Length: 292
Image (tube, rainbow, N blue to C red; front, side, top):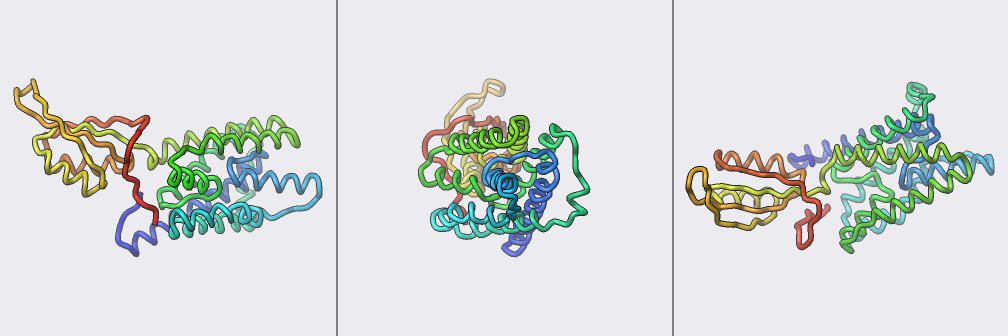
């Protein structure tokens, strides 16, 4: 997550979104087109529509128009129910990446045209993950199925990735039937690489459990509350190493908050002992920062 004053924050946010948009458009015009691949979500659906129109109607449809139409309804829903600024910044990504995909100068497109489909799938997936991660760090999304996933998650507290995965499978099945099975299978590698890249680059949707043994529980809890707005549970214990009573604080925070929080706690209590554990599943109330 990016931080700073209001003006600086806005500049950083827009800069990350523009860079992410450029990388996604560049990726479509190089790795994706070179390998004949179909990315996941609305981007893949848009490319599929383009290929069908070109193959069966000899009509060359612009990427941006199809992409904008597909995103219009999910964007309107998120604008009403999730957050206005969040949706508008996401629309900036959609518009810029869509326009760049259609109008990117050929000098960039000709710069990288691989003839190995596997290389296109792997490195295209990595570049796609980087572009999407930049948007997520700027508190926005690349649009499409992300809108749907966020809406279902925040309004109904249910996971929607299984439905999105099923939708991607339908897109790939149609592409395999109409065009080529091997391109569809290489597209699976592209999508898998993107997913693995995102899990490594962005941790905003993950949680970490902190087990904190400290002599200053009140001060440490104050830092946790101020920096993350999360609570903590206190346990009394006994330290056998120095034969003294200790306090164990148990708290769960968002993964992207962990590093700064640990640093702040160590400043308050240099002798603190902290065990950070990745949280695999969390049930119950957990504070989620509202989207702007």
